[in-house]
Image (tube, rainbow, N blue to C red; front, top):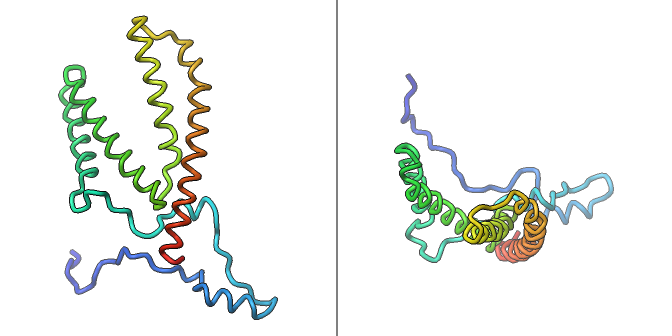
Length: 186
């Protein structure tokens, strides 16, 4: 049986500079040496955008983890409703799923708008889902049922809405990331 307390510490989760990329001063000095030595190039683009930049942005209610608690309570409510039989607990299941969605969207939107981490695809799909659901609910209220052709007719509108929102959200993230990395000093 292995000893758990042998004096060693766990690994730190603090980000450290990678050994492949030299500090900016070293990269400039090595580029002036000659043609035989080249400084390693940093990858710029989508891969660097997916990495988190700096610290996670704190919520306005910082000491309390409200979004995380909302997600936890929503998951517990959805699981309880599912185990008891979701046909009889549809309100609890809907409330649980709704709580998880609200908490997740809040965290994703805060991270995206601050330039911490991109969530462009998910955030761009939300207006399309709301629009599509609203149209279907209106048709259901008026007609009593939603015809199958309605879903196919709304598909081009949904795709156009996603494309426009994606473009706007991506531009906002790129601006926020540029400001964030300038403030960090990268």
